[in-house]
Length: 354
Image (cartoon, rainbow, N blue to C red):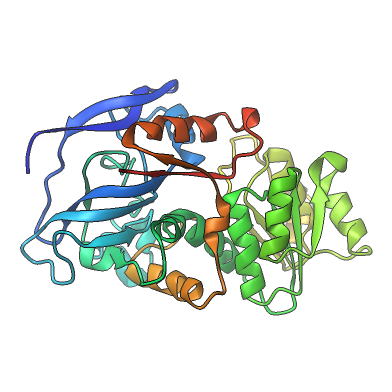
């Protein structure tokens, strides 16, 4: 298939998101051409606009899609199949795969293909590279909503719990309870955390955090979060902290509050003014682990997340606060994430492509 297609992406770097036009992507023998059936906007979409990505680049990386065309060597899928695809779609033909660095296949962050190295999913058509390994059938009983939430929110939040090395009985703090933080709460509970302290402020996300397993709530507007957490724990420090929101100050406080030899797992887009507190004194000798990175990609990751959903142990559709119908509403979903301060009720918007 050739020709032009409509999409939504960077109109003016650093400034404007909106409608764009691009060539329909061409596929290789291992790839598939797909059209979205449902997609979601992410907080990282406005971050990418304001990071200065080039004009004309189509954004979007959370999607359930219908396959339109497959390459000659594709074995598992055919046109008409509806699949889930993760936000990270590794190139499995690179040396980094042998080092278990799927997120960095082909170079640093190379697994994060959409919106960086090629057009993303806010388009009439997009390419799924190496579709047999990067797409996953949606199990019977699950919806497009489950699939779209699995694509990024679930896998990223769960990766936060993995990076935090949570052991059963641990005390875990999740700083920031937007959709990723809420999935980090759920993942911490599933990994066996004994006590989960969620840091937020909005009542709707506080209520969801409790549903997903938070045992305690700390409101960041009530004072320094590290002081509040340590007071709540009777002077003790938590075993792990997952940062899924906040700013440079809260990140420093998360590092400060975690116990010696504890883990800080960072999922937040930290700014250049983020610092490691006391790194130049004895604080640097406390053996604290600071981890961060892209979530893993690939079909098996999605299959594992879907297994939790079909078993009734995880329902990520509770994250969805806004539902739109129609391609043109990608703009509305983006605006909700770009101007969240004006929409305190928003958690996660989804767009169904009718």
